[in-house]
Amino acid sequence: MLNLAALPSPLWVLGTGTGVGKTHVAGRIARAWSAWAPVIYRKPFQTGVDRADHPEADATAVAGPGIHAESHVLLRAPLSPWAAAQREGQSLDLDATAAWCRRPAEGRILLEGVGGLMVPLAPRVHFLAWASAWNAEAAPALPGSASGVCRRPVDQGRIPCVLVALAGLGTLNHTLLSAEALMMRGWRIEAVILNPGADHTDAATAEENAMLLRAFLPMPVEVLD
Image (cartoon, rainbow, N blue to C red; front, side, top):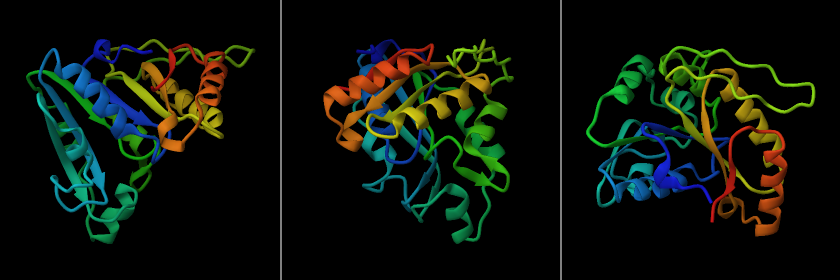
């Protein structure tokens, strides 16, 4: 199993979609890190809540001893950030949110995305485009081989990520598409983490899907226990 405590900081926790367990994985990483250093968890976009300490807020789920949890944009409707902002008659200041994410801090920094990689934030701007624009300069992507195996691009100082995915039916396509989108934009994926608890996948099926993904991806693919 992946050594969560050894993952680098700062680190993004991203997902192939909504409901894959990003916050659960972020909490596991934060607790593993907190045994060694203070942890600052940052959630730049949170929908479906009206305050940072709401019982359903992701920051509430992650916060704990040695873990300081922060939220920036809070929107009441449980929709994409763009749709939720439209419901409230506002537009999101994406530059200010990027600056909020980049603030220095004492300790290890853990950032969590919102929904899937391409969830809309504004007209013609999805999450991955926004995060890639400020998360260091874009790195060159290496083309896939004729065999279809995805090649990891060379990163140039970009904050790396872990990619959280479901473990059951449909995860192969969703995970490969998401991993390719990240790598083509220069992201380093520390690991793909399949979360069988999110879709109630049995252990044998989860491991079988992990094995198949390992044949296509250059980074570790692990099943969360």
